[in-house]
Image (cartoon, rainbow, N blue to C red; front, side, top):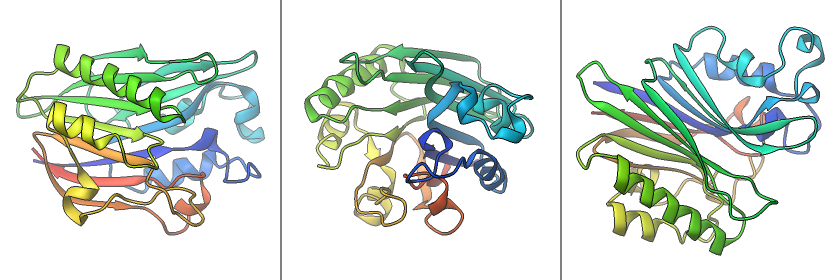
Length: 246
């Protein structure tokens, strides 16, 4: 069976230079795609300043707007907590989420990070495991966080289960794939099909390969960055789109 997937660091629904709130446009753009699973990083779970003014009396969380119509299930992992807001990762699914957990993988008090893990029963009886991550800015911290990802995978994921690990890896030096490929036998989907990593940052002139989709026990058919308007105006990152079979 074929499935469709999107991962997107939405920058708290702010355009590249923080000039505009793009939440409504993000909802319109993502709803236009028949995606089965969507990963979001930097989603504001609570914070009125990050809600469009015309909606500020109706909703208090960005996920309330993004997930209110076409998604069967969703979950949110609160990672970074401030006085008047908090943000983190989210997973939206057209299939029921049987189980989920947000693991704290922070390495310092300035960058609060989480690993959001979902288990989704598919129509064929298999369980799809999804890991949504947003890693630190410094390489040594990212290595520690990848070790946490590896430890969770080894402990909880059956070796024959379909699996996707995606998000914002902040890995501009392209140094993390070695750990994931050698220890977990994962492949990066864009590199697998196109022989190079996708460039996703900054959205107005992408030069860095920060966003990735790693997988195991799936067959990627198509993977691309969504770089045309409106996608290049919604965040400082471009989203990555994947079609795959199990």
